[in-house]
Length: 612
Image 1 (cartoon, rainbow, N blue to C red):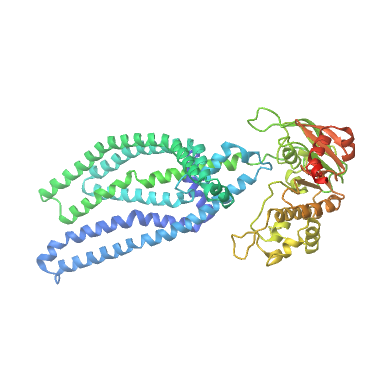
Image 2: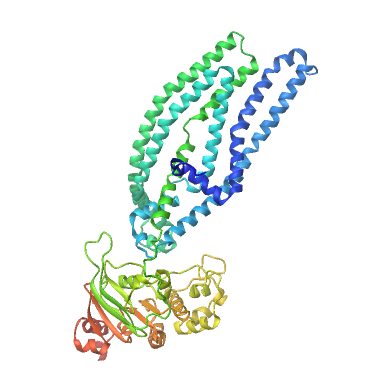
C-alpha cells in the first residue's frame, strides 16, 4: 500500500525508507532498539517501585517468611531488568556506528551520482547548487546527515518511554496520565515549530557559512600551506572565518532568543501540570490511600513523562540533520539529465570524417554582462592540427569546453561532419575527446591508472602504454619511480612518490595519447608545455608532429614555438576569430599574430650589448 503524499514528503519517512532499502537488517535492529529504549527504563522503575513497596512487610516478618521471599524475588527481577538496561549503551554504540556508516555510504553515493549526472559542468558553478551540496554533505553543521536515522530512532524510543509513563500514571488516576500527555503535546508543537523556523533561518545563511568553511579548508590544504606561511595569512584566515561565521550565526541567534521566550511561557504550563500531579500524589499518600510501592512507582514515572514532548539538544540536532534531506532530494531530481532529443543517438566512432565546425557560436557565463565568445566561426579539419592563440581571457578555455560538450553554446551551434553536436550521445562524444587541460587532474593512484584511466577493472594494454609514454616523454619519470608503473603518485600514501609539475604534465599528455590510441578521435592540448623545462619543451617540439599526426587536434598555447608547428593557426580576439592561416602566412599578413610572435621572439634574441 502506497503511503500518503504527506508521509512520503516527510524527511523522517525518507530517512527511514533509505535505511530500509539500503539495509533491512539494520532497520530491524534499530526498531528492536527503539522498543527496548521505550520499555526497559520504565520496567526498571516499575520493578524498583514494587521492590520498595515490599520492604515494610518483609521488615516485619523477616526475609525467611513469605514477605521476605516476595521482596527478594522483586529485587531479583529489578536487578535483572537494570542489568539489561545497562546493555543498551554498548548496543546503541555498536548499532549507531553501523547505521551511520551505512547511511553515510548511501547518501554519499547519491550525491556522487547526482553531481555526475549532468554531462556539462555548469551546475558545479551555480551558487544555489553549491549551497545545496554543502548542506547535503553536512559541511555547514556539527551534525552529520548520516546520523539522522539513529537519532530519529532514539527519539522515537524516548517518545514511547514517555507514553508508557503516562499510561502507568493513568493506572492511578486516568485524568492525571492523560492530562500530562496532552500538556506535553501542547507544549511540544509550538516549540518544535520554532526549532524548525530556526533551522530554516540557519539554512538561509548557507552562503556565508560556505565562505567561512572555505577559510578553514584553505588552512588545512597542503597545496595552500606555502602561501599561507610565506605571506603570513594565518591571522587573515582566522579573521575572515570569524567574520563570515558571525554573519551566518546572527539570524540564528535571534531565533534562539525567541525560542527562550517560548520556553519561559511553556514553563508556567509545565509547572502547573506537575504541581497538580505532586499535590494529587501527596494527598493520597497523606490519607494512606496509596500504597508505598505505588507511590514510589508514580513518583519515578513523573519525570519519565517529560519524554513525551520535552525539547532537548537531540531534537535540535535531529532537525538540523533532517534539513539536509530536501537538499539531497532536490540535487537528485534537478540534476537528472534530460532525455536524449529525438533524432539523437548517432554513432561517434570514427568522427570527424571531414571537419568540426563552430558556426556563429556565442557563449555567455551565467550572471555575466557580456559574451565570452561572440558569433565565432571556426573549422577543425579532420586529421589536421589547429592552434588557437590569444591574450588571457580571450575565451580559449571556453572554446575547449564547448568542443568537449562540457558547456552548451548560448547561440549558434557546433557541427561534426555537418551534424549538430547535440545529436550525438553526449557521454560518447566526451569519451571521444582526449584532452590535456591546463588544470589537469592529479590522481593519488598508480602511474598506470593515471595514464590509462582504467579504473573500472579493464586491463591496460602494455604495448600501447609503453608507446604513449615514449611519445609523451614520460619514460624517464616512470623509470625513476621505486615501483615503476605501480607506484602511487602521491607522497601522502606509504610507498608513494610525488612528481614535479613538468613530470605530471608528461603523465597528463600520455593519458590523452592513450585515449587516442583506444579510439578517441579528437586531441585537445591546453598549454601542453606550460610546466616543462627548456630541454623537455624542446623534445616536445621535436615530437609535436608525431604526437598530432593523423589526429584532429586543437592546441592552445602562449608559446609560439609550439603553435608554429600546427597545420593552421587561428587568432582569437574579442570573442571572434580575427586571423587564420599558417605560421608563415600570418607573419606575412603583419597582423596581431605577427606582433605577438615578434614580441615573444624578442625576449630570446641576443641584445646588442651581448653581441658585442
